[in-house]
Amino acid sequence: MSATLLRAGWTVYLKELVDALRDRRTLAIVLLSSVAVGPLVLMLVSTLAAGNEARAEARVVVADGIERAPTLRNYIERQTYTIRPAPAGYEHRLREGTLGDPVLVVPAHFEDDLVAAKAPRLLVVSASGNRRAQAGSAALEGLLAGFNREQATLRLALRGVSPALVEAVRVEDRDLADPAARAAQLATMVPFFVLMAVLYGATGAALDTTAGERERGSLEPLLMNPVPRLALALGKWGAVASVAMLIALLSCLSFLPGQWLLRSETLAAMFRYGVGDAAAFVGLLVPLAGMLAALLMAIAIRCKSAKEAQANVALLLLGFSMLPLVSVLDPQGDKAWHYWVPGLAQTALMGRVVKGEALSWAAVLPSFGVGAVVVGLALAYVVRMLRHAALK
Image (cartoon, rainbow, N blue to C red; front, side):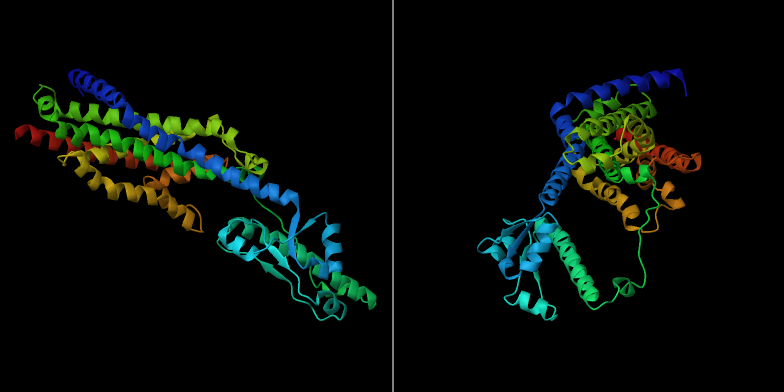
C-alpha cells in the first residue's frame, strides 16, 4: 500500500469522522439508546429484586379466616411471620395487581378437620399476571409445607413411631459452580447490551456516509476528486468502525458506574464486572465493529436514500440481534462452531470473561480471521460500487 494511498485514506478518515461526530442529535440518540439502556435495565432489575427482598424480610402472611385455625396461626407466628387480614375484594385486587401478596384462605372447619386427621384443604390465592403475588406464593407454600411436616411429626410421635422411619433418603444439594461463576450470574446480561450498542452505533454512521451522502448530493462531488477509490472506501470504513468502537467503549464503561444503581445487596454481590472485563470486551469487539461497518456500507452504498438503506439493513440488524439467543436457548452450552459465527462468537467470549474463565487463542482468533475476510470482501464491493458511481 503506497504512501499516497495512506495519506488520502487518512484525510478521508478525518473528514468522515468529523462529519459523523458533528451530527450531535443523531449521536445523542444513539448514545442514549445504546449506552444508557444497560445501566437503566440494571436499575430496574435491582429495584424489582429489592422490592422482593423487602417483602421477604417483612415476613407477612395475608390470610382470610385465620381465626378459624389457631394451631396454624401459632405455627406461623413461631416462624416470626406477621399475620394480616385479607382486604375486602382481595380477588379483584390480585387480578388488578394492586395487592402484591398472595392470600391464604382457611376453610370454616379447619381446626376440627385437623384434630380428626381429615387433612383440611388450605387455599393459596394468587394471579399469574401479578408477578409480585406470584413471587410470594412460593414462600407461602414453603411455610405451609413446614407446618404440614410438623403436624406429621407430632402425629407419629404420639403413636410412638419414630419420624425417621418415614424418611427413606435424605437429599442434600451441592453446587459445583465456583464462587466467581456464581457471582457473575447477573453480569452475563452485559454482553447483549454491549453487542447492541456496537450494532446500532455502526448503523447510523454507515448509512450516513454512503446512502446519506448520495441523498444529499455530496457523494458525486467527492468522487470527482483525484482520490483512489480504495482510499475513499478505507477512510469511510475507518470512520464508521471508529464511531462503533467509541460507542462500544462508552457502553462497556457505562456498566462500571451503573453498578452504583444496584439497590439489591444480593444482586450487587452477583454482579461481577470490573475495569479488566470492560477492557477485554473492547478488545473482543474490534473485529465485530470492523465487520459490521463494512457490511452496512456494502448494503447502503447501493441505495439512493437513507430511508431505503434502513429498509435494506433491517434484515442484517435482526439477524445479529437474534444471534445471542442461540447460546441462551442451547442447553448444551457453547460449541466450537460458535466461535466462527460473528456476533455469536463475541457473546460466547464475553460470557467467558465475566465468568472469570481464561480465553485461549483457539477461541479468540477465529473471530478475527472471519472478520478480516468479511471486511476485505465487503470493502472490495464498496470500491467497485464507488467506481461504478463515478462512471455514471
